[in-house]
Length: 234
Image 1: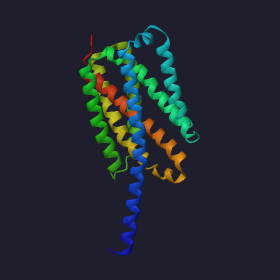
Image 2: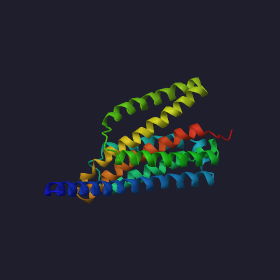
Image 3: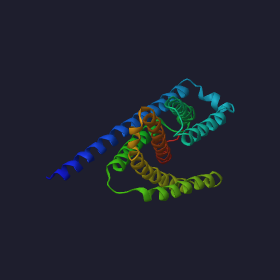
């Protein structure tokens, strides 16, 4: 092995180490967000506080706040301080936990557990693929974005049709879309590792925004799988 090969090998090792370091931060924030959502939803359901959400305009207010938090965090990602970014992300995870408390009313514990385990395994496998693959997944982005728009439109239409067969197809396509987006987003986030050269604050803000992206992929993958597993309480 000549000197050139040694230099290239050393550079590749440093890049890989940098990518892993950044993604560890992303996954740590994502995991924290999921934990907050899970604990909040279980607490709200087990204490009966979900009834307040159902019997008032509170649920609509919470949903509006959710959308506002996502838009705010995404739009100001490069200008936001780490404290503001972390507060916004934690607030969003908490608000999602409030709305998720209602899931326990619609689905059995077994269905929720099975959907979560399946979503975790699927997300883990696709995120690992997105990180490790040498294939450029850039072309996947537009394809799955179009698929996402199609799923949203179909879901709106099916609100009026209430067609169980269409609902099943939507869920299948939704799982494929969010599984694909998981791999695509992971690869794109991995490529952001050089932000670490800008210092701790820039790294923290970027990792939180990245965590939000993967958090949304996981949550939506989980919801689509939950629709498939069913197990409604009737």
